Length: 337
Image 1 (cartoon, rainbow, N blue to C red):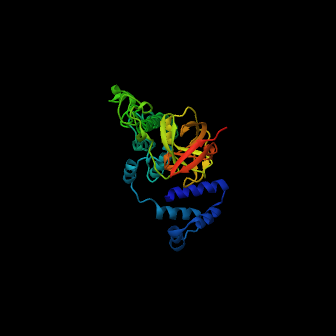
Image 2 (image 1 turned 60 degrees about the vertical axis):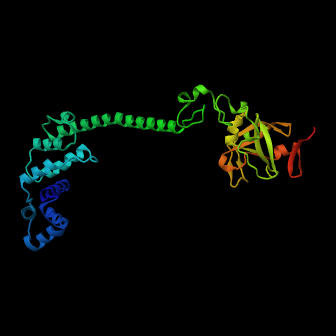
Image 3 (image 1 turned 45 degrees about the vertical axis):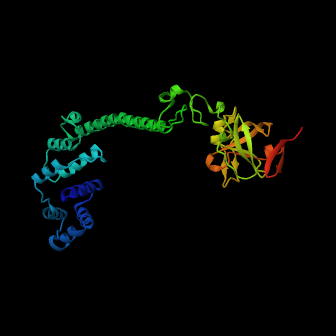
């Protein structure tokens, strides 16, 4: 702080509290510190407040020229994180080091605001700092309102871009199974639907004329506890698990057999599949095992990663059948009512 500003602040306090010259002399000396305190005590040694004030100003008066002040004001720019009024007060403080007139201060402030000439047109024509301050307030409101639609546009563009990326990731052709294009752009569209059993076009898997034992869904030969189960004309190699309370099916297999009903809200926690697993819902299946029909078998769906078997037959269906193992071959016969 310059000595002139410091003395002005001190005298404003003195006038507020109505200090006498003696009180001003005492409080002024006690308020000094550093070099100023050493100078007054060791060299100047004033006897009154007027002498103290004159000594301080003579020793610490600004050594900067008016040209230096104008040069500093011309190069000072408003930073993006300060308001227009904060910038104005900073420029007024710099101008206080020399006799800079009000029009020059206003001109330097306008020059230091980073905006086009048309954008700052509202700031010109002020005759006093107070009038200029009011124009700065209006200018800030205008700039704030102009920035809001721009921010909304950027958010909308980001949302649109995110939606497009999500759509690209989820793209899938229901005709040939490719993830490179969607159904309406499929180059094999004229050949008809693709059979995911024999990979030929013109029919679906359920109607495949080449359907044999080789059409088992991801056949897994585990041990003699495996049994073929037919669901919606699809044969699934299944594991008979006497230790399980429920029947469990892979999500990918469920999508192939396409059950009539599927409830996603009935999700439960299942232990025993390597770790605790949350099912993705439950469906009711009509199963054919060894020529016997088991209707409305409640079957829980899990993610493919949770289970290496396509279908796990638990106690809910075992209770309905007699299980026999003869010559290493597993058979299930439905109990008579």
